Image (cartoon, rainbow, N blue to C red):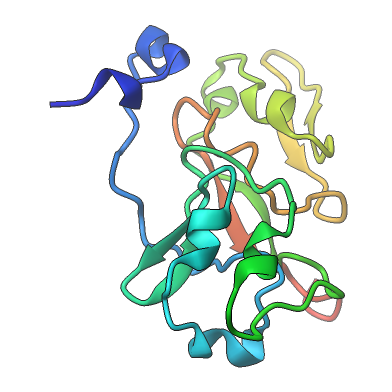
Length: 168
């Protein structure tokens, strides 16, 4: 049975229930150095310090769960980590948002919840004839904060690894 606190107002009105179990994510906390990520002991300090609760410990690894919030880039995770695993001098994330084909706009339903939630305005909507505007992600503006993930009523927003300039 779902607790009342697990059901947001938006979810109640749209009939969309959120999963309470955090999915295992291949994406790691901001500024976590790739070369030492496996040295994470899973102590949970970063998860406890995260004010938005997007860092979870799964097994003995720190992962991200944007289903309930977003990363505000406060740096609390890096400050409290007892290990030397974070590097605040580099770009925080190496992923960007990706919008799946299950997006409501592709089915002819007007929805801009991801774009409205994006603090960087990295999701814009391109006009089209005979239907709602289609979402388009500006990868260069996307910070990977995950703000657009929780508001999506159908779970069409997700993360994908950032492509290097040579790959594009």
